[in-house]
Amino acid sequence: MSDTTISRGNVRSQRRGRVQIAFRKPGFMVGFTIIAISTVLALFPGFFAPYDPNFIDYQAVRQPPSWQHPFGTDLLGRDSFSRVIWAYSVNMQMAVLATVFALVIGVFVGALVGYYRGIADMIFGRVVDAVITFPFLVLVIAIVAVLGPGLINMYIAITLVGWVYYARLMRAEVISQMANDYASAGIVMGYSDLRIIFRHLLPNAITPVIVYWMTDMALAILLGSSLGYLGLGAQPPQAEWGVLIAEGRNFITTAWWLSLMPGIAIVLTGLGFSLIGDGLADLLRPRG
Amino acid sequence: MSEAVLEIRDVSLAFKGKRSLLDVLSNTPVKNVNALNGVSLDLRQGETLGVVGESGCGKSTLARCIVRLHEPNGGSVHFHGMDVFASHERGDRTYNRRVQMMFQDPYSSLNPRMTTGQILSEALRVHDMCPEDDVPARLANLMDLVQLPGDALEKYPHEFSGGQRQRIAIARALAVEPEVLIADELVSALDVSVQAQIVNLLLDLQDRLGLTILFVAHDLRLVRHVSNRVAVIYLGRIVEIGDSETLFASPSHPYSQALLSAAPSLDPDDKGRKIHLEGELPSPLDIPPGCPFHVRCRHKSPKCTTEQPKLRPIAGRGSVACHHAEEIENV
Image (cartoon, rainbow over all chains, first blue to last red):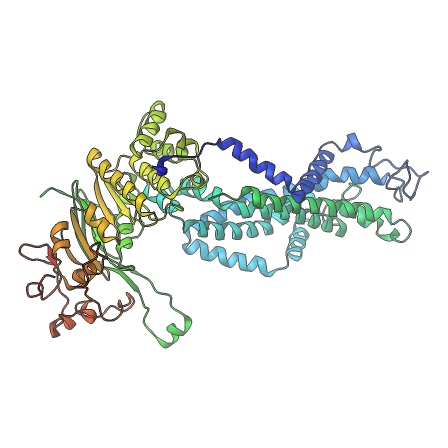
């Protein structure tokens, strides 16, 4: 009876095996390292930055990179390296706060309309159409313009627009998962709708949403610094990459390091999130 | 005759067709897929009722209607006298506990993110089947019932073969101690050797637990092996229903005769007596008037093209829906 014999093997060790496989992929490894370092910098900027980011030294204005000031100094003599490091806490915070509420709202709404369909789904479809027709940045700028500039208002604006993308993805995935008999089995077993949606469908439907979330965190940093650059996000003198690039803009030919260094920081963290998203797609896919 | 557990009366179900803008403008009527057209049958306490028919004849739709996965457009389903589709019964989960269904595809009917233990204990907990302390013992007991080793509880569905997964699906259905099991093509996706194991397991469990089974399948030998009674479905209607041995030995409806003669014989000398049906199976979008089988029937008369035959008992056989049931010779 080959049918009743089961190969030996511990489930937990197989789980660990998959994590190891993910880490063996160079892309995921690099992404993970970048984001790990960025997170540490964001949590303890004071520990790594040699100077106070807002300390003004008129004796050392617009100095080129040196051992004393690795990224040079700006027009007020503030240490550029320290300001880039301190900006990590603002920009990493952006990556999380601008996306996590959109993620939660989108997953809930998307799962519910995907499961129940009907009139709510049709209304949802119109809302998605309406939001997606506008260019993302234009819509966010319009909302910030109404609410007023600042970090909190920027998070609200990005969440108001961003949840639609998560909900759309979640809805499609829930609908495709419902074609599986385990969803019907849940109904036949007499489980409640909420149990079927959140205990059965959601864990199977969420993988693409998580992968998109990683990309979206990169986009959020880009968007946040764009708004900072335009003067609608973080406000000077706060150290934020977009603000730093804007401050160096007038001196791009004479003091190139002012804009280049925060630019590199943006590219690196964006790359890190994208690489992690790639690796997670493999890691989270259910087998069999 | 024992008491009917499930009484299905005139159940019909049409899936709404898509209507394009052009159809609306040209006033073309909507084409509905008439999956079930007035199916009536009783499922009796402790019996196994086989349901056979071609692909697309409505076998699975009937099974899904019984467990409320589809709501019929007309007719009723009564369980111990209780109307299953009455609006105040809809929220009642005890019906779903007492009438369980097992699905055709063992690869999609188990949640890939839950271990066997989680799948089974969820069923036990949601319906408060036993005190919390007894859950592990009950799980071990269920594994024994479906003859799986105890360490299967720790594993995920992808670690099992198709046959093992069907055992888990059976265990899940049994966990909530149902009275009726609906087996929708339970073994169609499995190897023949494994099919026998699963079917024998099911029959064994039926003996031990006193289950009533509705066995939907297209494999005629299998149905003959497991069923006490058999219903033959054609285009969403029952054309013949009766005692399994009688029906297989001497089918009365011309369609049943053709269907049974199409089953391959194990006797190498059995060279013929195959009835070849003329023409195609009519589309359920457009069911012919009168007897739905008349377009393919060898015995059709003018009456067949206009008047739809009712299912009526024939002496010495089951019930047959054919105007000429008495005249047609048994094959």
